[in-house]
Length: 276
Figure: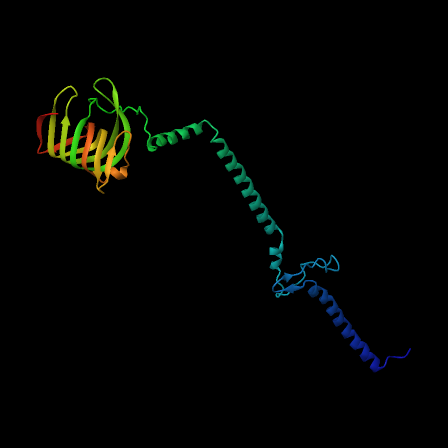
């Protein structure tokens, strides 16, 4: 055998250097080409492009490859919020409100709701009952009302106007118009009290009459002029509104059944007997 020439030996030495470097290139290529990454969409799944189970995510990866964007793509966080809010609000509000209102109107408690509705209807429809509810706090009055007159009548703290029956000295009762206020002031007061069998009556006059503190006046009828100049007739069959009475009344003539108050004061009082 002939010994190799110098040219052949140099070619073999060059081939020995080139082959290991080429093998290193082919071995490193699969490690870098398996994941395909984009700054906007992240990395593609490497499972479909892995040639063999030997290639694992533990291989060295360059810092440019974003690995964490894979986590938000998992279906776990997207499925849980979609199922929970759809089931929870649809079941709870549909069952709870439909059962409660359907039972309450049919229960006996519903009868209690009708009672307050019926009471204001009787008071506001203008047709008062013939037999009004008896006022247990009212004293006993004479059956014949006294005739009261005044130049003006004003109210403070008007509480209400309602119907009330009051007891009379003969054992019966009469229906009156009940006016409640904190204070009632009367200017040019005059009051005539005359029993039906008598020809004479007692006339009491005063410049002013003031009733203060939990004032209640029971009236059989009243004729007056409002502050606006309108004529006003009040009585059991013609109940007034508080808007008409509260500002005050002028030239008042009423059938006064009686009144109660914490204090009643007169100024410049005079009394005399007068024939009817």
